[in-house]
Structure formats: structure tokens, C-alpha cells
Length: 492
Image 1 (cartoon, helix red, strand yellow):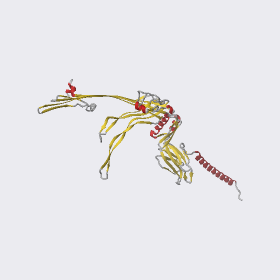
Image 2: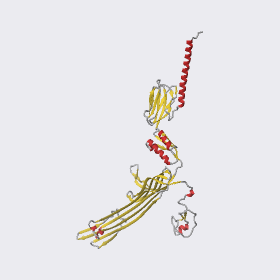
Image 3: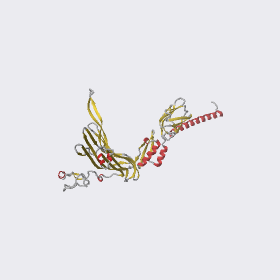
Image 4: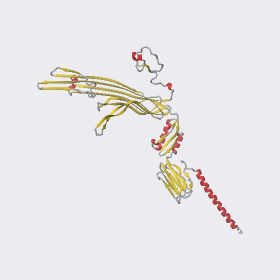
């Protein structure tokens, strides 16, 4: 049995105390590491992350960064090497043995892996660099609390709900300034209770044409012996590019030998054309709507021939393309505030015309032209208000005098040696637009074009030449009555 001296007892107590301190410190380090891992998960707004280390391999953790933003990463042991898959997207800077900084450089995705001196992985991060939207979120939170914004690559998406389309448009404009282009903004904002707008467009045109033509054609033949002198004066109508009615002339002959023949050509034409189109269209605020009423006419484009096996040309077929004409209306309304509407309007009225027609082709085909009245603009009008979005007043006058120089200037006789052509065209066009904020109504409150229409009976159509009994007002069908002087498609 060994006797314990005071020195031995003291050393034993110190050894026990040292072991206890080591155990306490080891427990504190493990507890601190576990607590740090549990309380600091890696999220988009977190800038400190500690990975889980198991047997030299680490589980990759997701880390979202903004452009120009950084995070501080602490490690449980010393870092020897670091791998960045794409340094253009993100970069990693090791400042000390157990601390590194990860910095977002450009929009994209990459990963960063840290190794120790033995080549084992300490930490692995999947990095997603997005646009920094914190400033925009704060601005939207103050002005439009119901809208959220998230980054998707180099684009952004807006979600949420607002009470009016103008708020959705303001949010889209704010996001467009952030990304630099409206094409990179996906606006998925839902508008609560979107208004519906009905647009009434009136296209009215009156055209007046006056053409006056008067000319004298002289031809004479004088024979003296073996000498024959002939005179022929045929004056064209150059202002109208030809006479109104070809061959319309009054010919008069004076004497036999020598012979003088005079042809008087005179014609006057006056015409009035009235065009009226009133297309109506309804669309939801912020959406586009299109209305088309018209047709298409064919235009020859060429001939396609089949080739036989012997190289000979077989059957040939005329190929055509179609050109549209008629009435079209396209508009996009946006209800800005109570009773005010912003409109993007495009209206067009076109018709087939023989003016400037192209004659020719196989079989003497004549290709007509199209007269078009088109207007496109952006307006801001109160609901129920009208505005002239386009107007035109045009007057064109042409006058031409053709004759023999010198002789056609004589006071009285000069009229026999010249022709006069006078054209006056007057056009007045106006396009009016009237938007209304409308609500849905019951079907019984709407009227159709065929309301009140009743076809005529056999006796009415045969004896009285009527094609309908009632048309133009809603009401019960009346029985066959007595003779009515008015008849036609519409009876007021």
C-alpha cells in the first residue's frame, strides 16, 4: 500500500480538474456548433451559413444572393482550397483559415466547394444570383401593398391583386425601370372588379365630284389638181385622261369638195358619295379587342403550269392572292380613374374602287384598287364623352386647255380649235370616338336587328309588292291589313 503524500493528492486533483475542463470545453464547442446550425438556416435574406459535415462529405446547401451582395461563411476547421464553378456568376474570397466571403457578380447559377488540407470537402453551396429586389419591394410595400415581386433569371414576375388597372400599370412601369425593359416583366397582377368599356366609332365621309368637258375636233380636206391638203385637229382631255363617255360626239360636215368636218364633244358629270360606318366594340379594361366586317377579293399573282414526263407543258392554273377590305376596329381601353378612359384606337374603312385600277393580264383581267380611310392614335376621354380623333377636308381642282397654238387664243373662233377639261373633287371626312364604361344587363333589355320583323304573305308580295309586314320596331305581328302606300325594307 502506497502512502499518498500531499503533493500527489494535489497533482491528482489538478489532473481531474483538467479533464473536467476539457470535457466542458468539448461539450461547449459541440453545443455551440449544433446551436449555430439549428438557428442559422441558409435563406435568401441570410448572410451566415454553417454546413453539416459528415465523414468528409458535405450536403450542398442553397444560397440566394443579389448582384453585388455578399455573405460571410464560417467553417469548423481550416480551409485549404476553394472551387468556384463559374467565377463570372459568383466569387469566393478566403480571408482567414476558417472564414470566407461569397460575393454575387452576375445573374445566374453556380456552386462553390471548400476543401481542407486533406482534400476533404468542408462545405458545398449552390449559389443562385438574382436581382436585388429589396428596394423595389420596399417601394411597392409603401405604394401598392398588395403586390409581390420575385426574380426569375434576368426577368421579374409581379403577383398579387389590386383594385384598378392603373395600379397594375404603375407596378409594371416600376418593374420595367428596374430591369431596363418592359419585355422582361411578367405582369401577373389580378385586377379586382375590372371595368368593361364599349367604344362607339363613327366614320362619316361626303365626297362631291364635278367634271366638265367641252372640245371641238376639226378635220378638213382640200384638193387642188394633184395636190391634196388635209387638216386634222383632235384635242384630248388631259385633265381626266380621256373623255367621260368615249364616242360621245356631235359630228357636222360642211360641203363636199373641199370638205370640212367638225366634231363637238361636250359632257358634264356631277356626283355625291356618302359613306357612314359605325362599328361598336366592348372589351375589358386593359385587354385588346378587334372587330372586322368586310370581305376579300382575288388578285392574280401568276400562272402555275404542270410539266409532263416528256418535258412538255401541261395544264396551267391561274394563282391568286386575296386582299381584305371592309370595316375594322381595334382598341385597347384602360380605365385610369373614376370616369376617365385611356384608349389606343385603330379604325379603318376600305372599299373596292375602279379608280387607279390595273387593266391587263390573261383574258383582259382588271385588278381593282382599294380606297382606304385609316386612323390610329391614343386618346384620354371621360366616359360618355366624344372626341374627333381624325378629320380631313380636301379640295382638288384640275383644269386643262388643249389646242393649236396661236389660233386657240382667238376671241371667238379659238373655241373651235381647243378643248377644255375641268375637274373639281371635294372630300370631307371625320372620325368620332365615344367610350362608355358599361355593365352587364339582362337579355330582355337588349334589342336585335330582327326584332319586329315579319315576312309578307303571298297575297301581299304578289298584289301589293311588299316584302315584309313589320320591320323597324318591336311589337306583336299585326294581321294582314289594308293597302299601305309605304313599302320596302324599313318602315318607320
